[in-house]
Image: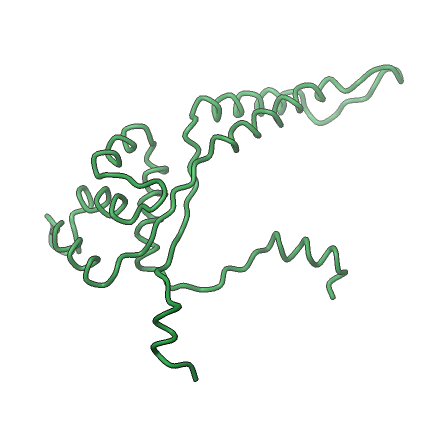
Length: 172
């Protein structure tokens, strides 16, 4: 059995990353191209061997737009607070309504700013970012900061990695 001193020496606070696409214009362009491609339908039959599928050029544009959206994704990394820091932060943002643990209007930006390790942000910068993000993106950011502090740590299963390795080894 390991000694607690050894465990404490190796212990690190939990970290969690969330990813947001901050290029709304690129997402809109991708959606437009996807709709245009879907409008061409699935069925195409060449009239001659020299003909090429008219959907090919549009599919290439969709792939390029998708790559641009993925490239514009930004990682936000959070680190869990210690027990006292967590408690102090909740106490600094008391609930306005009965039954709530904290004031969600002030606690969310404060938690995000306090837990953000990359990029580091102030509360004012979080609020400025909130002005650009839509509701779902704000929720994703908030959930990442909240989860890093409240969610149990497990070893995540990677379906992608498992599938790749199984295909390379024949499942052995």
